[in-house]
Length: 230
Image 1 (cartoon, rainbow, N blue to C red):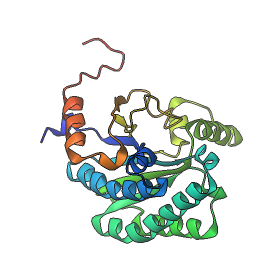
Image 2: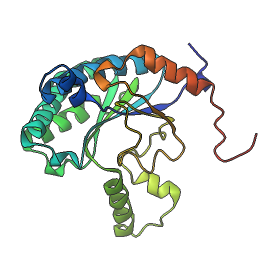
Image 3: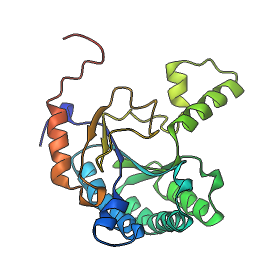
Image 4: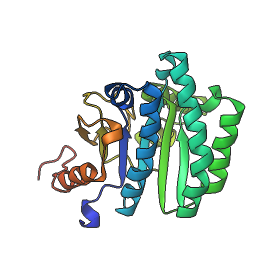
């Protein structure tokens, strides 16, 4: 489709609009979330098949606990089902699965599934899928600073990057937010300093490979100067 030079190494997506998608169909919000999970498979397959090595998805934020209990419980259940079903399939494809965020508050069953995903996919090299769950960008920054301070290490851009959840990964070249909102909602605040940001009105369950390819084509034509003059 395009040269390796024009391809991003890392795409991050804020998967917004599931609830509104369901509401427009006179269905409960949980129905939208279930449909949204199906889109993850299609888009992840599309990303990795195009030679892009890393995909990071914002699934559940530190603020999402404020939603109605029924919706939160449904999201937690979907997350467990996803880990249980998809871990072996991702392992077969050679995709490493990471869960990024504060997992300490999650129940024992979820923690066991996360551990199992790590054990079965750690070291695989066909691609990396990051699921951000109970994730907040500010909390991640505070955590990294506290970690370095506690270890008595000098704080530099490199050491700070190494203390983040995304240590060892390239920063996102592209950040996509579906759903029509124009904000990044506390997502990868440090890592997206030079990301190309794409806001689309498409609700996440309607997001397609065609729209992904349109974004990739725009990215390939973008002159990324990183503050320099060419």
